[in-house]
Length: 223
Image (cartoon, rainbow, N blue to C red; front, side, top):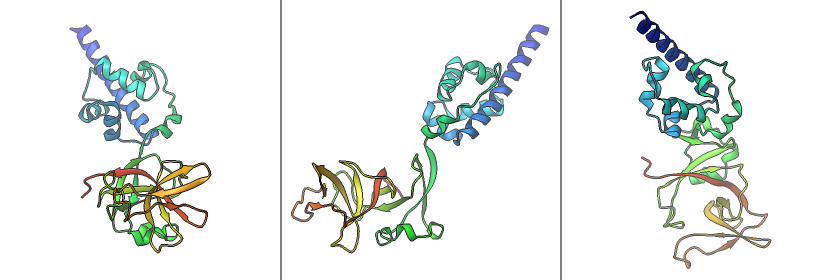
């Protein structure tokens, strides 16, 4: 019975160590239990029980998954070896950011807008560190890939490449437009995806036009 007590005591101590270490790892990598559960496939309730110390005997598969995710050994996760947090992993983990939803009229003034005054804010898991904003698709020019009222998230500072979806303020138009950028040799074009080519014509993209952001994420069925 004394041996059973020692084993139970050791197991509880190990569970407490895992909980404290998980808290440290989660905080240092700037994530939460929801993100950790999503990225690892481990149930959020399981992670919460590990952190609180309610789970005395975690599965080996759970320990392996967590150790691989945080780039540490199982012994480090159990507290048997001193933990050295790999902070370089932070850049590889999506971060939850507050993204302001603005109107199409405000896009052209984006760099001068005070985002604190925005009434609508969404949370998005993206890695961008630039100036990010969201806007609702307002027409069928990019249908069927992007339907009307779909929420589009742009990074104002991300440079576009061939095939990128971009927000552009064309020199001949008052409002910006959402198009795909196509590069052929040294010439850039802006094209709509709509099959109605007569309604949405291909335009050249020159230095006189303004790049107002590159698409980095789409959210469907957003209410």
